[in-house]
Image 1 (cartoon, rainbow, N blue to C red):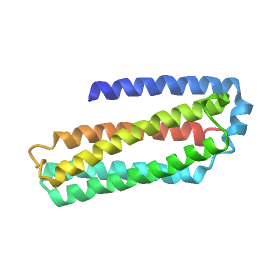
Image 2: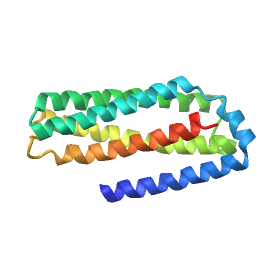
Image 3: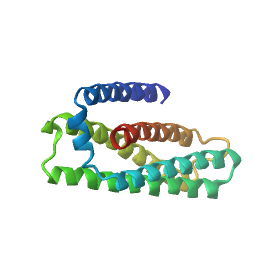
Image 4: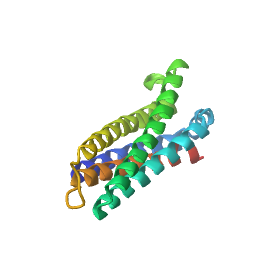
Length: 175
């Protein structure tokens, strides 16, 4: 999993560099397009992902202490919080498609849709993995001596959150 995480971070890092380079070269056009983005749904989605990370981290800690009920509840917090992001970002992507904005729209929109769409796929995968862990937890798969599956998925989920925090700063906040 760590190899996958490092590879994913390298890919996103290169994409962030390319975005920053293009933004610098076309600052006015990027600023104009960026100004049309809705900040509040992205901010709520960000808080959802961060809350999800808290839940997943708490689940790992709770399993390490043998607190199974708390671990499952914390895992469900991660799942619900991830669903908030999925719904908000999904609505955003559908709305942009409805406005005729696509990967071929060029400039800012190509990067925006590619970066956020690529990240969205990672969130969906991580969320699916959280669902699998929750299902396995309900079946008694994890105890305080063997919860490596939870730790592995948690590491991936935290990578997804880290990428989004950088992405949020680059696309929504940086001017």
